[in-house]
Amino acid sequence: MAHGSASPPSLDLTRAPEGGEVLTIQSGWRLAVREFASNRLAVVGVGILVFFVVFCFLGPLVYHSNLLQTDLINAHDPPGAGHPLGTDENGFDVLGELMKGGQAALEIGFFAAFVAITIGALVGAVAGLVGGIVDSTLMRIVDIFLSIPFLFIVLILAVRYGASVLSLSLVIGGFSWQVPARLIRGEVLTIRERDFVAAARTAGSGNGRLIGRHLLPNAFGVIIVNVTFQVADAILAVSYVGFLGFGLHYPNLDWGDMISDGVGYMQDGYWWLIYPVGVCIVLTVMSLNFIGDALRDSLDVRLRRR
Amino acid sequence: MTAYLLRRIGTSIIVLIGISIFIFLLLHEIYPSPARDVLGLRANNAQVAAWNKQYGFDDPVIVQYLRYMKGLLLHGNLGYSYSENQTVASLFAERVARSAYLSFMSLFLAILIALPLGIFQAVKRNSLGDNVATSLAFILYSMPVFFLGIILIQVFAISFPIFNFEASQSTDVWTVIGDWHSMFLPILTLTLLTVANFSRYMRSSSIDVLAQDYIKVARAKGLPERLVRSRHLVRNASLPMITLIGLFLPALLAGNLIIETLFNYQGLGLLFYESLSKADYPVLLAYTLIGAVFVVVGNLVADFALTVADPRIRLA
View 1 (cartoon, each protein chain N blue to C red):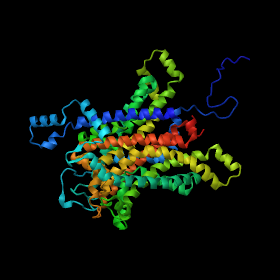
View 2 (view 1 turned 90 degrees about the horizontal axis):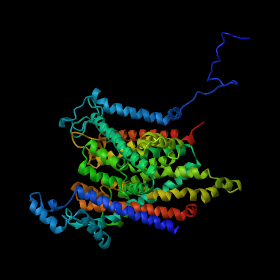
View 3 (view 1 turned 60 degrees about the vertical axis):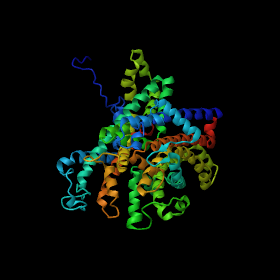
View 4 (view 1 turned 180 degrees about the horizontal axis):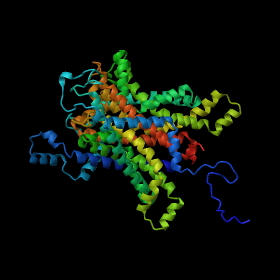
């Protein structure tokens, strides 16, 4: 029997021919994001980080405080009316200082991580791809930088060059690139054996294009995990430099600076100069560590639940 | 294995030479000559140039570097601190015993605590104790060293005056060692942070060891659990500790710096801080170089110790 009006059978991708369910195709990224979101600590971490970004950058728009003119009559006020977290030795409002210090900490953290990952990615990718004597030389240079005690060299350079966000970021990032370089080199060594790289080479792509278009995007998982931990380490490094008094100077300030000012008043019991700042540092770094751990778990295929 | 040994030593020497060149050049760039500090601010350029010529600071950088290295390696001459009016070596010698005590005591206690802790965490995995320990470790290594020190001072020296908020000020290292009242908090701070860092690795390495086949075999042949632990688990889980100690040396040096500054402990770390404030670059140069040497040698020793302790690596 001819059915003139019959149309070809439609292809229903959600049903297997013999019945039963078929899952729609999921990309690798969707799975990773899903894995990440199911980790409660990671979600908490993202929440805390977002809170701090909003608090530090949008907070001053809502909560106005004068951080430029000293107000010695109201110095060392405990938390109370007008000053939710009290005032410091210059009469500045501590909550306002927290926001401003947080801006510096986050800016330096992210920028230093960016510098570190850029240098590290370039060095690692070139070493992994080109191999041979270039690889050996670059890895020796990595070894040299790894053996220099980080805090000492950063402090020496910070004293001389760095009393600004930019120079501190460059100094910190400039001595944090070794670990990403090693990691990315390892990834590149694995990826460069894959077929698509051979195909790209046959199509005539040079090394630069290979690195930028093929190798680095495929090492993205390793890169993003490392970036998260770099930001956490950079924020800690800034707090150390600030605590020792070599960080940002008036009218700028950072969290480490605030703590070092507050330590002198511990015996007097002025807890609001120290503990709110310390808690902020710990929470920010912890949230970044949560995120980094969760990212590492979700991007590691072996650990994934199938 | 001798070939491996020689290769590693060779690489380490190359790395050390590279480090010394880099650091010397960097610090020379920042601080070419102490002439202005010695002669005073009102010295004119001619006097500065004459001083530089007399003391060899106007030679090409390479010559200065080679001279410095020759003095360092052949005569143990670490330079001269013009602001302290002492040789750098004597400045270090005054303080090295106290810093060494702080570092090694903390390291020793940290190993003593972290090793059994990691094993306990692996054996009682996901129990309440494990989770508490993991959370505490997590908070501790997200914390800057000085903040932990401040909390400990607040709790144990100010709110409950049990210990001293300042480290021992004595110049004699034996008095310092005996002065538990003052040294407890600095050592505790450094120990806690080291334990927090170690315990992550110890825990995962112990978990890995427990999943190994030889543990299954040992249990299957009827070995009591405590012997499984003492004979197989402890030995195999301790191996990463050797590498960890080597890797952790830079952090130990840095931790020393912060803790000595916070507790006012007259050690090498405080010397570094004071030299930074006074821009005493001969001290800073020597300090950074020696720190780098420690790191390289520490890693080398850790590598060798691991090769000796773990036959699997030796035969590979």
